[in-house]
Length: 128
Image 1 (spheres, rainbow, N blue to C red):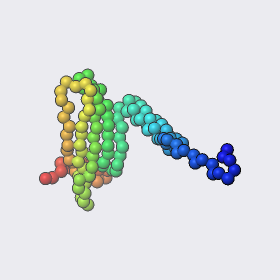
Image 2: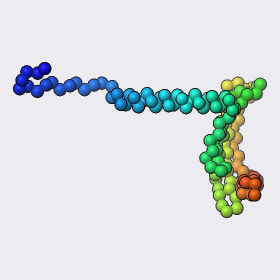
Image 3: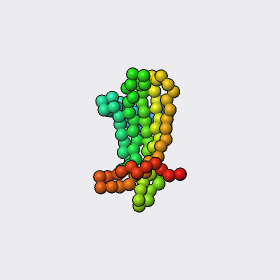
């Protein structure tokens, strides 16, 4: 306690994070960890994960469990052109293999679709 007539000494600034910031970081790390565990468990149980971004576009990750090839495959598709008659979608495919007999090769391809009575129907490759 300060003698009367004198102001108490100013508290020294604390080093590090505030308790609120520390709590927020801890919760964020926990949520990311839970999401990672859920993602890995789903991938192991189902063999693939698909995130649809629209009717024709998606991002997909799948397990490769062959005797000579083991790893992950991934693909991402996006719409490159659209008009009243058809929609063209480009898909990029890649691989991350930890067991392989050959060098993995990715691919990019493009296909066009028209909406039919049964849904989207492929009508051929994209034009030049």
